[in-house]
Length: 240
Ligand code: PXP
Image (cartoon, rainbow, N blue to C red; front, side, top):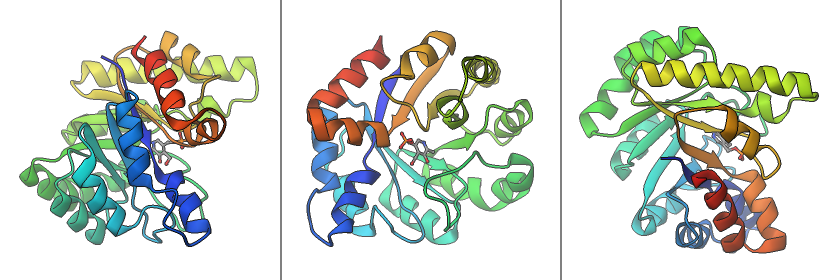
């Protein structure tokens, strides 16, 4: 079954821009779940530019569906994620300069570190692991070798494609990657750059999808239509 996970980072971005307490990402999480989101995603970044530690604890108290903690695999984040007892950790690369996550993990580079240092504490804590990766055969094979429960396929290149031909190529890559990940026994999640214009072709073309994470486009649309309406509309599209 396909479901929507709502990323609430940008509610916190707006709050922090004025140093205020509103809009509150926790309130957004409550509304999103009421409107049909199957869970909430947030990215606690090293620089705390949007979600902050206190938000994580407050979110944990109210989120009823999947609690998906997106993070870079630093020791500090691992401690916070495990202490918070997240349902799912989505591991992403992170750099200070980027405006948003720019690409998937380089699995060849992180393979040994993830095997030795990162996976064991999460496995012991019973937290499922999802790896944010580009739709590349080798990266998916390494994710399976590490026994990740899920991959999150990076859809940014599809979302940003500047021609119909490029879009088709990217959809084909995503389709192949989804089939491969599914055949290797992993859940197929996806996200980045998805919006009301590009979601349907993606859903039509890519099989085996499970949790789809969307943030920016939903928060932007919600300014005009209200978060509850926006989330309900996207959740319905994704559920098909
Ligand atoms: N998935 C991951 C791993 C991300 O880093 C992000 C952005 O924070 C998203 C999904 C959501 O992307 P967007 O905000 O473009 O919908």
